[in-house]
Amino acid sequence: PETTATLTGYTDSIGNKDYNMKLSKDRAETVYKILIASGIDESRLSYKGGGIDDSVDKSSDGARQMTRRVKFELK
Image (cartoon, rainbow, N blue to C red):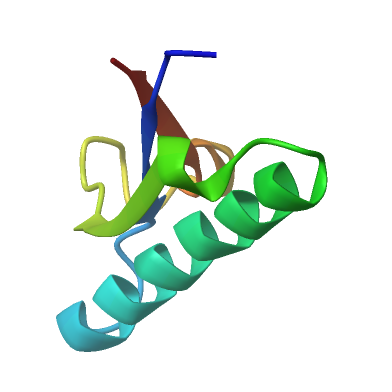
């Protein structure tokens, strides 16, 4: 019950930077809302957009799918 978490959303590298920043934040917010609906107190959670994760080959559909994610950082 004392643990807190920061949720950070990420996108693939397709699209422009501003759109992907908003999309990454929206992605993290969606997971945030699911966790609150499942009973986790919202005071224990925060979320943010991490933008583009360009650590994979942009031409690989499978690799790009892995960058569309939300990372949990527990504190």
